[in-house]
Length: 328
Image (cartoon, rainbow, N blue to C red; front, side):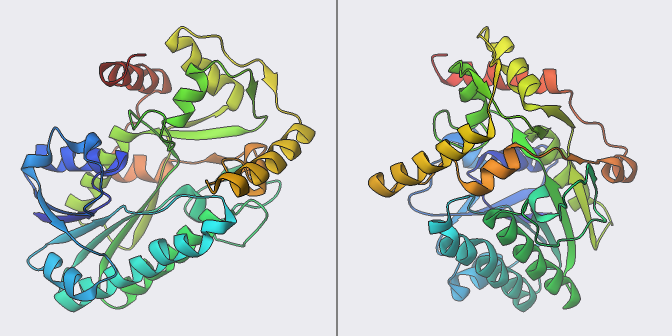
């Protein structure tokens, strides 16, 4: 198949590219002039790159010409309300433009990489699956809202003729860019021997599993479905503890108290306003850090006879790959 992919230079996109290439598919990927190629440099010469603005319809029409399928993974992640408008323009309006271009050019298959954040979460709810619907509760952040609205554009495309599939991964574990945020920040937190851990739970999935599931679904006849991609759920204490132990570091032992979170949110608000940088802890992320949800994976296991990588293996592999790139 001829596959067009957005977000190819990111952690998830880079592994999807490797999986597609291993299956003999050809790839055309979009990037900006300023895109870092670090995560995809080992396969970059096997990919046809197009440079342009995803909001430019003329560029999109040309870039999509001759493609069999689109895998859409590009998105902005933020919990800072100052970035809400930018995130909406990229995640929602950008997806609408891409869907419209696919319909215009005649691309038939559209694989959308969403997030478990786009699935509704309600107070006192423990288990969540693909049947749960968005209700806009306190557990739904500005990022979650953008992903939910993004999905609505994809489903709108399905109504207009696209063959649509959506995956909703939880926190993705893998060797990303050290010290530059993203899910790899969880590994840096443990490596830096931070003493505190949130009181809630974390859902996680190996980036290689996400890539395998995406490509298997693209190759399948399944359409009009969404699938949660989640390997398991752990208390934050145990999650960070496993990573710290694998690094040979001291695990966090102190639980963050609600008053500490309130102070952290206030401090981050002030720091971000003085520096102009994004706030790392917000009221949205503080609420989520205390939540206890488990995203069920039964549907993808049944549909593809899928097996998820155990957390210990994901952690060991990620650390091994990070140590190859960084002096850890």
